[in-house]
Length: 299
Image (cartoon, rainbow, N blue to C red; front, side, top):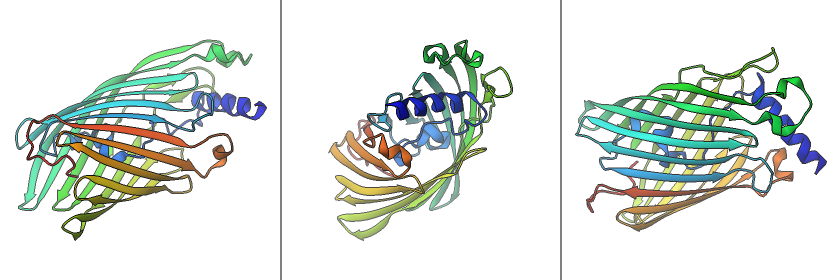
């Protein structure tokens, strides 16, 4: 219990100081929450979709990250897509709530390839209940409540069965904590880059490898390597490896022409494994287009 207390106190320290850099929540099911990190993805599937995601990180460790997100995307026509995203993320006494709208525009590069360009705009609230920790340090004598802006951009390339993504969800460096040299914290630029391909094994089975990297100033790079098998466009099974951090198993089940359920279990390989039973992530994806001809997953 004493070790856990020290971990939580240290988490608050780094969250309020210059050491804190990797501020955005992480996901195992990145591929199915793409427009949260890349506005260019909005509307690229050709149908209206709604995604709900709940992630509990490092279960049984008090104060560990809890994230809930909702994203919506809709094509307006064959050129323009719109969307919005809502993300609520809490780590111990620190809570951040994001809301942003997305706009994407399609450029036809060739008969078989399209380049989507997107922008994201919105705001987020940042709150830190530092007084509840009762640490006794003057730097933690006042709670923090701020509202900062969001402005980001991204590009998404689709070439037959291949895709590539590059985005910066927020260029703005809003202030989070303001005080002495050791209690200042501002937003850091997050760069997301990834790619994926679909291999047809036979008419009932495909294999979809993908990679997603997150790069943040002042923090170690995070790279996810994922591979899934799609069976008859009804079930997806696979796994993911986050370099030097964790292994994950994931499954997605098509429950009809309009809904898909996903689940991922992540086992960390870092020192946190001694205090946690892993991480859980649940996703619901809805096709709201009303067209049974639309494929639920068309990455």
